[in-house]
Length: 323
Image 1 (cartoon, rainbow, N blue to C red):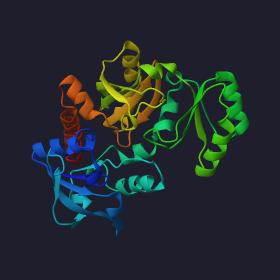
Image 2 (image 1 turned 135 degrees about the horizontal axis):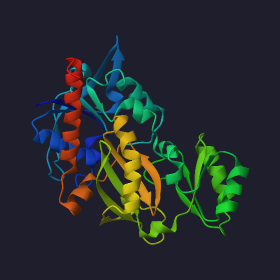
Image 3 (image 1 turned 135 degrees about the vertical axis):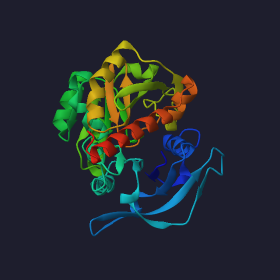
Image 4 (image 1 turned 30 degrees about the vertical axis):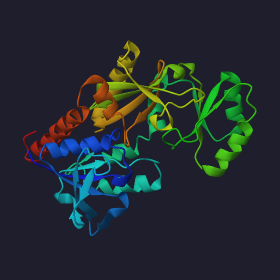
């Protein structure tokens, strides 16, 4: 099956070929004989009921400094595409949300991965609140007195922006720290949304585990250990990747989440677990494929494409009235 595939993603010049998950998804699509295109979110245009993109044919290769070739730009009617991969990085702002509304005009044929309406309805730090028994003690509020009361009850806390990403503006506030009021003032100036406040989990010193689920099934995990003096385990801020397997608690979390993710058309999801607690459900542009591939000797991008092609076959069968 040769497909026409469009990647809606960030500029190719800035990707790390040794770590970027979208890069290996494109490599796998190419290896399967699919025709691959690239466009930026700002290249979308909607007119007369039709969604177009100023797209360019894409060829990728694992060669540092020379990892892609783009063909000539064309005005691509996305109705003629088989699969659109929604893979630009957050922040999950109004620009991001707008692209989900536009792509919703296409889905389910062509198939958009992940389902744009469900991506819009599942921002990382809010979607997880549907599973409060799996989360650490958490407060989402703009109210200073509520936050101070939560701190008094929990002692050691972490504060973070509700729609941030990559560990940006995440602060660990110890009981003796006198900077909370100043941080709340800063957050109020920068963000209009409420703040997420959680009990600090000392288990972060042993790592923040990223677990990949493909069509609701756990496929692999990598542990990310923060460097000394750092409360964040994100790899791009110095976290160290370690081989990891799922604990019974993590398997329990995946069993709870899996059916919900699959039903919502969230094919490629990365969840974050610290200790026994689920902290985030990443559906916008999850990462971790290459690290898990190397540690476990697997090819998760191939499993993702298997899931995409299986879903596409179901869409085709439904269109022919076979199911």
